[in-house]
Image (tube, rainbow, N blue to C red; front, top):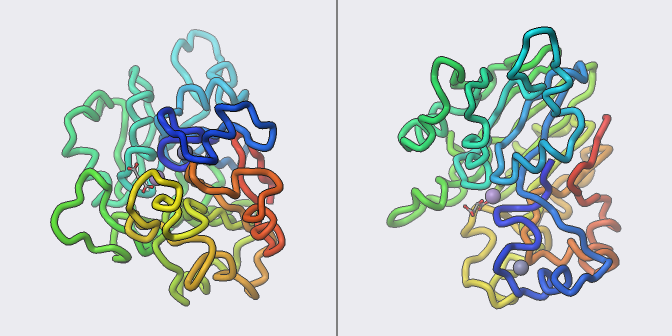
Length: 299
Ligand code: MLT
Ligand code: MN
Ligand code: ZN
């Protein structure tokens, strides 16, 4: 639904080189909305994975999410988005929950930690608890949020949301603040890991059975924000490993037999957004695709 990182592409106030291409109308770049995917096993009931601030326009852009798909006699409120799973508490992954108010029943899944962060923020009480059922899930316990779709979460190296950072921030902790997701249906498996600070061997091993891997493509180089003149934070400090360089993701999944590897959650400074750029050619030569809004993947 949305292939960009927080802020989207272009970011509303950004004049980095990559955003400037968009503002100038360059045909090598396309706008991308913020981080979200949706998954279905039956083509009718969908699991939304992360609720981005762009959720309303993402729904408007996608026929499968129209309430008309659930039209029935006497029904006046309906949606194919039957359940939502959040992989962390970052703004780009939870702000869209506010769009899902309006007395619509759905199930909200996440770790106890991330659901706790949401519950502690009174603005999310607009999700009426008589409509929205929160379901804390634990690693290793498969659940079926929509018919036929088996889902499992697992911790990945991450951190607390930016707005909860205090003092020394533990970056790369494998706890319940950042998770990856395994989606399985019809004998096919996909992994979705939009935020990840590093790939330890056990993580690479875990995704080995994936037909598809959607992985954190936030920054190409660790010091990209600094080079772009838009900040001093490294990708790793933000909980996002770079694509290129020592310990980068480019080759972290080589040799596992993964059929389809796709970068997602791409920051507006990342030159892989530019068709034909050296960085785009680098990821393509290494066997990766780049996600785009509206992309459909049928494993
Ligand atoms: C991230 O992925 O690091 C967050 O979305 C940053 C943010 O809160 O803007
Ligand atoms: Mn993000
Ligand atoms: Zn930018």
